[in-house]
Image (cartoon, rainbow, N blue to C red):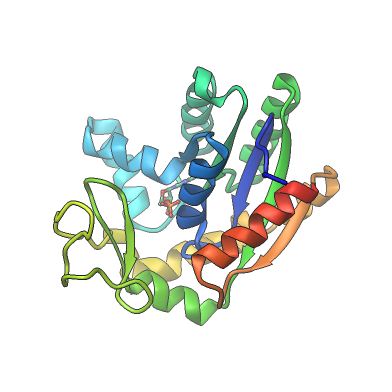
Amino acid sequence: MPVSALSTAVVLFGSPGSGKGTQAKLLTKCLKVPQISTGDMLRERVRTGNSVNAAVHATMQAGSLVSDDLVNCMVEERLAEPDCAAGFIMDGYPRTRDQAQHLCRWCQTHGLREVVIHLVVDYNIIIARLTGRRHCPRCGTLYNLITRHPKVNGVCDLDGEPLVHRDDDRESVIRERLEAYRRQTRPLLEYFREQGRPLFEVDGSQDPPEILFQKICQSIRSA
Ligand code: AMP
């Protein structure tokens, strides 16, 4: 049976480096609904920046969370676009209780049901993954120096663009980001349970992305 996204908000939940971005890209191709990555949206704001965005950049560089007001507003604008009407894949949102309440209200008002997929990955694997992570600034393809090496060192397989190491994927910032996850984001699992949202734990430590993807699809199907 094919997996269907009809009127489903899939929330990919997990710490930085748990594989949300990779899985979101696989899911959007299969479900034909958009990936909403608040990290990508914020990086784009910073790139095209004004003085407000300089403050956002500083917050991101420090590994802290950007304000709920800004992120909620940005997400709400994005969800108002027609391609989100039949569902979407949330990647990196919500990250605080305020954001989770915002999304729950939005889904209720718009008749979407949420399914939460929690990607569980061991702390040391996360650190290794994030320090080795590289991406193509042109097409967004993700690589890893240990697990998913490009064919030619430092260059994207698809378009030959030089690969980039994100500023906040350096070890000192990674630890701050993981701490923000532990303090502000992980407790949302309890919130989703309280709200009776279907929540699936998927072990993302060992399986290659394609196998993990099959497990996630199975969970969405059964929700
Ligand atoms: P990500 O690419 O999802 O790892 O996000 C990179 C950075 O963007 C985070 O470390 C935060 O500084 C910021 N960010 C992304 N999403 C959110 C969010 N939902 N709420 C607050 N800050 C966010």
